[in-house]
Image (cartoon, rainbow over all chains, first blue to last red):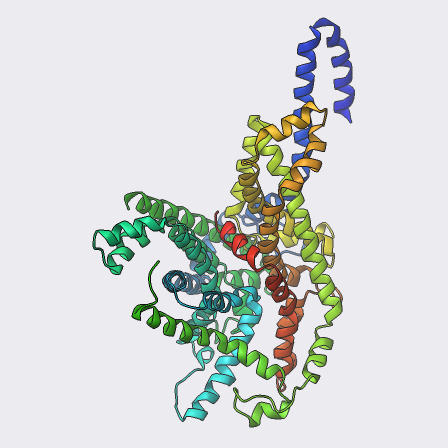
Length: 315
Length: 275
C-alpha cells in the first residue's frame, strides 16, 4: 500500500520532463518486473514459511536446551553437539544407517543396471517384466515393511515345513540378520525405480556405436565394458546419489517392520531423531542431530557429485 | 538388431525367475486377503483360498475408516499437487523471463532447497506448524508439502520453460496482452507435458508419505490411508488377513492411477531423477 502512494506522485511529476517514448518504455519495463514479482511472491512465501524458517529455527534451537514444550529456552552453545558425539545410541543408529546406505548403493545400482541391460535386449514380454519389477515402487514403504514382516515371520517359514527344509527366514528376530532382512525388503521395493533410469539411459545410446564395434570384431563383453558402461556415466551418477541419499533417510520401512528392534539394533538416524523429539522431549537435542545429519547428507552428495563427475570426464 | 539367440534365451529364463521372485509377495498378499481366518493356520501359504472371504475386506474397510481416510488422502494429495504445479509454473516463468539479478538469485535460493529433505527439518516444522495451527488441519499439511517440494518442482519447470520460444509471448505482448494474462492464457496451457510428469511423481510421494501426516493429523477423522494402514496388523494380530485386505484397499487408488497413466509414469520418473 505504501508503495502505491510513493510511486504515483513521482511518476506524474516525471512525466512531462522526459520524451514520451522513453518514459513509455521505462514504465512498461517497470510494470513488467512488477508483474513478474507478483508471480514470484506466492511460491516464495510457501518456500520460506514451509522450509527456510523451519531450517533456521532448527539451527537456532540446536544451540538451546529447549524441550519442545516449556516456555523456558536457554542458550547453551555447543553443548548439544558435544553430547551427540558421546551418545552411544546416536553413534549406533548412525553406523546402522551408514551401513544400510553402503549396501543399498551397491546392491541397487548393480541389480538395477543388470535388470535394465536385460530389458534392453530382445527378450520377449519386456513390458510384463518391467511392470512387475516396477510395481513395488508404487507401494508406501509402510506397506512394504508390513508385507515383509509377514513374509519372514509366517509365510517363508511355512515353505520350510512344506519342503522339509530348515532355512532360518526369521531375519527380524536377531540383531545379526535384521540388516539382511531390511535390505531385501528395501531392494525389492526400489530396484525397479532405478532400473527405469538406467533403461532410459541405455535407450539413449546411439545404436551405430554398437554396430561400429561389431564391424571391428568386438565381442558383447567388449561392447559392455567399452561402450555401455561409459555411455551410462550420467545415469550412474544420478542413481548412486539418489540411492545413497534415499537410504540415509530410511524411516517408514523400519517403523512398519522391526520398529527399530530387536533391541535398538535397527534404529535409523531419522528414527532416533523422531524418538528424541517426540518421545523423550529433547527437541533441541533432536534439532542438533538433524543439523549434523543434514551436514552429512550435503557432504555425501557433494563428494559423490565431484568424484562421479570426474570419472565421467575421464571415461 | 540382434537375433533371438541362445544368449537371449538364457536372459529370458533369468528374467522369468526374477519376475517370479518379485511376484511372490504380491501373490501372498492376494491369497491371504481372500482366505478365511481358519485357513491361516490349516492351509499352506500358496494354496488357493477355499472360497473368497469378502468379510476380510469389509472388516479392513471399517478399520481403515476407508471413505474418510481415502477422502483425506485424496484431498491432501490433489490440492498439494495442484498448488505445486501452479506455483512452480509461476515461479519458473518469472525466473526464466524476469531477467534481472534478483530473479536469478531467487532461483539459486529455491534450488538449494533440493538438497534439504524435509526429514531433517521435521522437528522445527512441527514446532512452527503447531504455532500456526497446522495440527489436525489439512491445509497446514498441504502448505508444508508445497513448501518442501517446491524447489524440485521449480527445478523441473524452469528447465521446461527455458525451451519455450520467446516469440510466442512477444506476439501476445504486441497484441496488448499483459504479462500476467500471457502467463495464464498462453504459458500455463503449454506446461501440460511437464505438469503431467510432475503430477505422477509428486502424487506418488505425497500419497504414500507417512511421517508428516502421522505427526500433524492425529484426529481419527483426519488421518490418511497410509497412517490408518500402519496400525492394522497390530490391531488384527490373529486374523491378519484383514491386514492384507487393508494393503490392497490402501494401495488400490495409486495402482489404478498407475495403470491409467503408465506411459507418463516412466517419463515422470526419468525426469524426476534428472536432478
